[in-house]
Length: 80
Image (cartoon, rainbow, N blue to C red):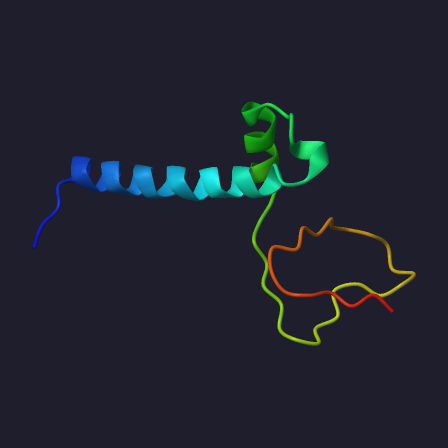
């Protein structure tokens, strides 16, 4: 099988565009992002990454300096 570079770029570009659109849609669920222009959200996405944690994993301990803002896409967080 073979795929041209142009075909690959089209497919990959479409896939990437779809992923970015899903991320933008997700962020718009938060009120403070709802009316933000796409250009600003895209710039913000540049600095964000998806992180997955296992069950019972501690992501923050009270008193530690805050280094991240977390947007929970699925699952649960226990604050104690």
